[in-house]
Amino acid sequence: MTVIIGISCCRKQFDGDDELAHAASDTYVRAVTDFIGGIPVLIPARGGAGDIERLLRLVDGLILTGSLSNVGPGYYGGPPHPPETPEDCERDGMTLPLIRAAVAAGKPLLGICRGLQELNVALGGSLHQRLHDLPSRLDHSHPLAKLEELRHAKAHSVHPVQGGWLAGISQGQAMIVNSYHNQGIDRLAPGMTVEGYASDGTVEAVRLPGESFAVGLQWHPEYDMEVNPQSRLIFETFGDVVRDAGRRTRQAERSH
Ligand SMILES: N[C@@H](CCC(=O)NCCCC(=O)O)C(=O)O
Image 1 (cartoon, helix red, strand yellow):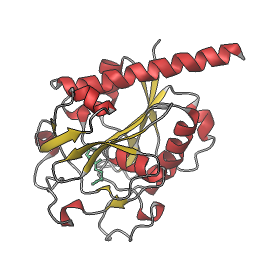
Image 2: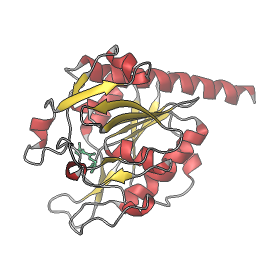
Image 3: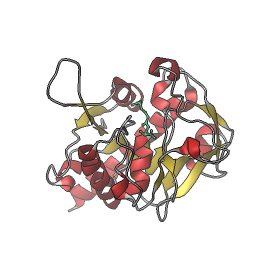
Image 4: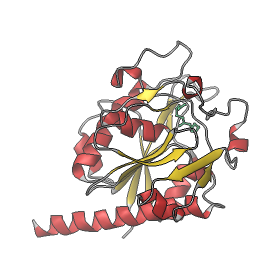
């Protein structure tokens, strides 16, 4: 069964345009077509765009993408960002309710970087806005490196929690991952479990246990999926989960 995967967009201003565009990196599209074997559908960053449940019925799973923008602190009771901090309130207005609806509907979702942060906030958790200000934390942001250098950079280790989903991906071994974020999980959302930590204690992977598959990763497996077997396996495993969920949904629809 060919699955349809919704990919969250950001609002972006491209050179020469006076209007904002809705965009997602080609890496997410390739992850869907080349490693999940699905059809990618871009979901615009437009809060209040209408019937979220109707939108969810059009896709078999969701990928919540990374972004230089940050989740609005108002959604988790945090202090306002400093003025120069990038935000995307329209993206928040779409993804946060979409995550809650997907979890309620048992629609599989994979959150990456900002997507992990959205997953945690949507389900009632909070964020640290400047991880590198916390004592004994690594600098997860790599402010001086250009993105293309980051894509194959190995920034730090991630230690999977024994017996978890991530431990199955890494066969229980520590993973060496890229890193390109300033923010991170502070208060874990109720019911969420940690799947992996960085060596400085930063939460790097989370999962909402239960029927539906809801996983968040703070690093970017799409950066090196063509050359990193673990990154490839993350997307292949997600694809299997989405296909299984899609088959169950169609069987349920046929039996009604
Ligand atoms: N802005 C948040 C999330 C960081 C993030 O998603 N980084 C990836 C940005 C580049 C890309 O789109 O791949 C934070 O700083 O924590």
